[in-house]
Image (cartoon, rainbow, N blue to C red; front, side, top):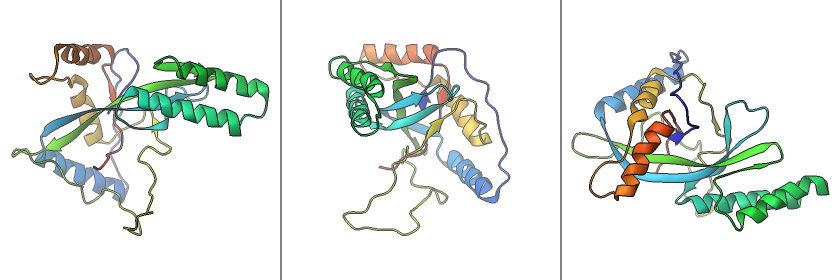
Length: 220
């Protein structure tokens, strides 16, 4: 789940799955929702999303949303822009704004900055797990993707879950995705283990960012 810009909640466009694979995934999600009706909130993760002039309201994830604090995401953006200036910039004019952004990231905890025509933002995603009536956390579903050729070797690498991910608030959703998105709009922290400032921040976010975007499942 990822917060998007402040404003009224988005209308949700629902698309009924008709492809056999999509229909199987939707049926799997429906069964999982029936078995696991509760949520266990783990806490936030942070990454970087970018929005260019041709993206409209869409955001592209350029630093995986897998960092434990905002500064780790900023540091990753710093590195990304530095290497872009070093390896990709074709002229001093292209390199100058990239290095200016790098210099700013080295001294300021910025949450958003614009480099040329691209807007970068530190994004916050709430990580949660589904739990059943006994408090058991959901395990992988039969339709969750697995490597075509499993490799248990020490050098095995697989694509990051956010590789090429586009966050589009206007994209149509399946019925179960739509239900999950609407249900999570009111998600806020509660309970005595959270400091008062954290509870107030969480309640305020429900008002300032009333909609959510669903991100792919991650496995830990």
